[in-house]
Length: 193
Image 1: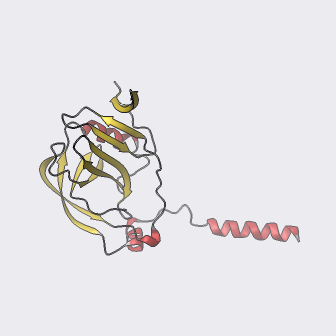
Image 2: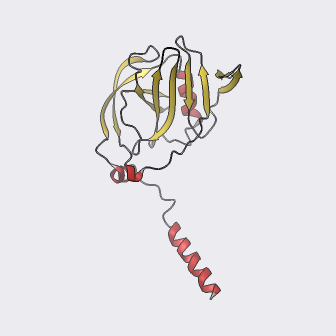
Image 3: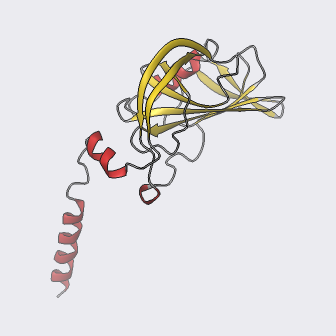
């Protein structure tokens, strides 16, 4: 009897694992999660002279984790009278938690989609190029837990001639060329030579 239970359990486990490692084609995944809140249109390209090095480092350090045909980086900018805040996190093209982007950056082979009040900020400058972008918003029934809980890089970045920029960058691997340094009661993001 015990052998029958063990064999039955193993059979169920094996059949449950079939197809687990299959790669889903984007168009199949796209159909599975399409919602009425998708984005299909043109976004203006921007550049950020003082942040280009950081954006390139994020893309290059994590290119094996976030293939450009599946992922982009969401960049959200907010500000108050004393600081700017940038949150950078990977998102899937066909399962994005947000679709209210107004511009993009191209760095290190990756696409960074911009949201927030960046258009009126001196940190980002228009290039005059337009790009066709298609995003699909994650349906609530397909929504999964955030796969990144803690930022890999977090602190104030002072290499731009503007208000201090507080950055939270989420990724799986360490962002090469940058480190966090305790400075008094603050954490600073510094370039590593």
